[in-house]
Image 1 (cartoon, helix red, strand yellow):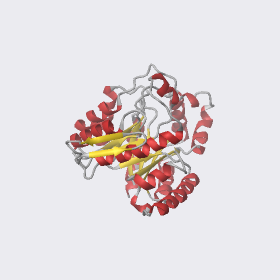
Image 2: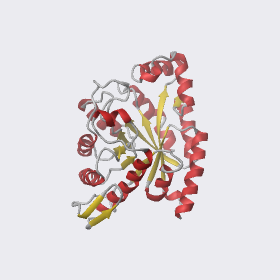
Image 3: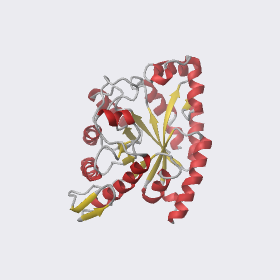
Image 4: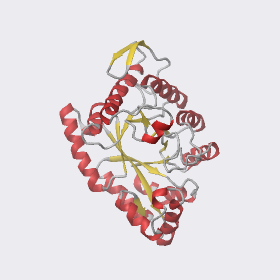
Length: 320
């Protein structure tokens, strides 16, 4: 199993810290670095810095040499897929072929309202996601593309230069909706990413995905499985509790809870919680279900020491 680090780019991340993470995550031996795609804080702290996603990914492409990276995930409501295809191709080219393009249907209503971005009903957003993926893949071929969908139209469009990866960067689809999202995964995704499922929830989602794959005539093993998992990791109970207290300063929903209850509450929500040995066992259980990549959702971005702990005691074990 590969481990990457995922940062919430809208929760106070600034350029200095982003560049520090780019260097440190690569030095420590993690496989990848990921970031969210939002325009302002999801915690109600709109004064926090929110780095523009694709500018930061272009910066990352030039500052690293080994890391795979990408957005988790770009809402198809934010950018026309032709524009997204052009930006992704350029960043993939700049990085020498290390981008994974994560896409989703979008969900955050206040963000759309604040910036005047239309937020259509869920069925429309799902259709936009599916059409958008088709547009992106077609443009990456470098051939003339004409596309007449319900939501997107192209007439003889061409994209040059094409991405470094051929036929293009892997398309990661994020989400776990059983009726439409997993159907789109079965039809179009190279990688499926789910967020903080429990082990039992994940088993159920796999059953649904396999059913959609059967309907599409696709081998489910051809779809890479990844998870974004938040975490509280410490060497002992006292360190776990200290990290829980630190997270309460960052995550508004946790702020009112008794600190000593936070670890068990978030564990029930699908977080990785425990000592390094305990977390290794949790990760191995997911690996047994075919998960080959985990993006560790690092909420407390001022806690640098936890990255060293993970790199020293968890990374070697899950690789083995």
